[in-house]
Every structure is written in C-alpha cells, then in structure tokens.
Amino acid sequence: MGYSKTYEIIWANIDANRHLRHSAYNDYAAQVRVSFFKDFGFSVEKLARLMIGPILFSENTKFLREVGMNDSITVDIRVASMRKDASRWKIVHQIFRSDGVLSAVITVEGAWMDLNTRKLTIPPPEILGMIESMPKTEDFEFGPEKS
Image (cartoon, rainbow, N blue to C red; front, side, top):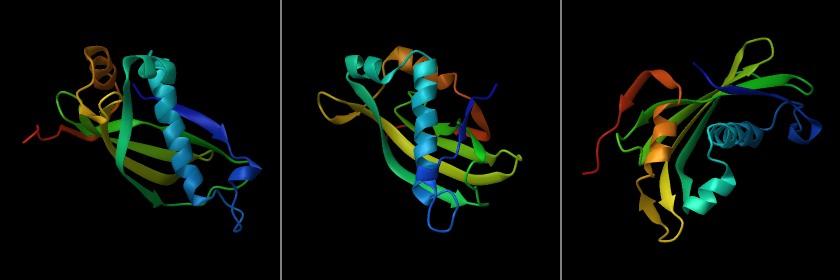
C-alpha cells in the first residue's frame, strides 16, 4: 500500500521560467515525510518529546518534466533501503503532475539524531515499527550494518 499527498502549485513556488522552482520540489518531498510521520503517530511535537529527529546526509533531485502554475502534483514516499535497526535509511519520492506524468524523483539519505547528545542514534522501537511499515521501492534492500 502506498502513501502520497497531492498539492496545488501556487504562485510563490513559480520561478522566472514560469514553472515550479527547483527547491520547491524538495519542500514538497519534505512535507510528505512530515505528513507520513504525523499520520502514523509521530508528529513533530511527539518526536520532540522523544528527543529524536530525522537528519539528512544527502538530497538528490532528478528533474524530468516541467510543472506549471495552477497544476497539481502528487508526491509519494517509499523506502529504498535501511539498516535493520532503521538507524540509517534512503527514501525515494516520485512527483507526478496531475496528468500522471512523472516530473521528478527525489532521493534522500538520512539517519536519526538524539537531540540531547546531538549524535546519531538508533530510533526507539515504536519509530522502528513505523519505518518498517513504510511503503518500499521494488528494489528495496536492507543496507549494511554498522562496521
């Protein structure tokens, strides 16, 4: 089962070429991640109470087709790889225009940070369960364990 959100493109997200500005794609992908966590019981507030937060090491965007003003996009979220303890992960977002055309693919790699120690950490079991339930890419694999 997949997870996605649909957004209408607004004037503030259009660039001088009259299409969706490059950084807006990443903003929508980030919003889908936050929405997924919230919808599965891990709002920003709850993560703050647990003193844990997701961090990104890299964010790669592949632009495929233009998206224009007043169009809408659907952004999905899928896990491509993660360590078995979910301490590190790779998430892929596909962004589709309202006509179903794939417009961009965003890949983010990240981990969890303990907000007290400011160091990487293994997420608590309840977060591990949420991440394990995330939709997976067709080529999903468990990444290498800590060396």
